[in-house]
Image 1 (cartoon, rainbow, N blue to C red):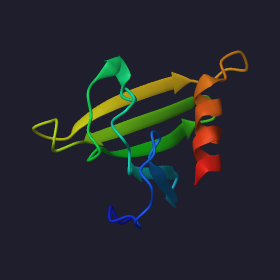
Image 2 (spheres, rainbow, N blue to C red; image 1 turned 45 degrees about the vertical axis):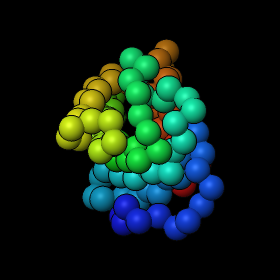
Image 3 (tube, rainbow, N blue to C red; image 1 turned 60 degrees about the vertical axis):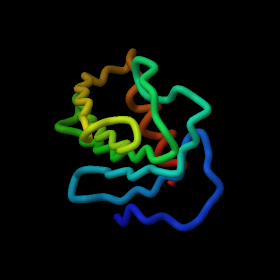
Image 4 (cartoon, rainbow, N blue to C red; image 1 turned 60 degrees about the horizontal axis):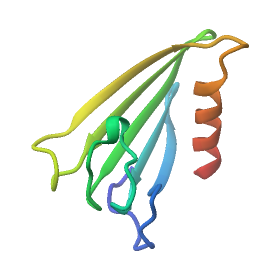
Length: 105
């Protein structure tokens, strides 16, 4: 994916483009505005924020998500968040999040 997205209006949730890379869904998002706190822990960000998300089902019961956050106006270097989820019928949050992201692309 190319980080040079077409000229579009800046949105709170950004502009996302996704593609499959083998068994991993890669979602590349930029075009955020800085009106909302969207990063975990209410971390600051600017309109230069760029997030790359990797979603991978390690097996039927496990979902791995890696976020790479890059905002050169706020942070000295890109940083990562790694999440591992055990999927059960009672716990739908990671799957719902993934479906929501997939509908946006």
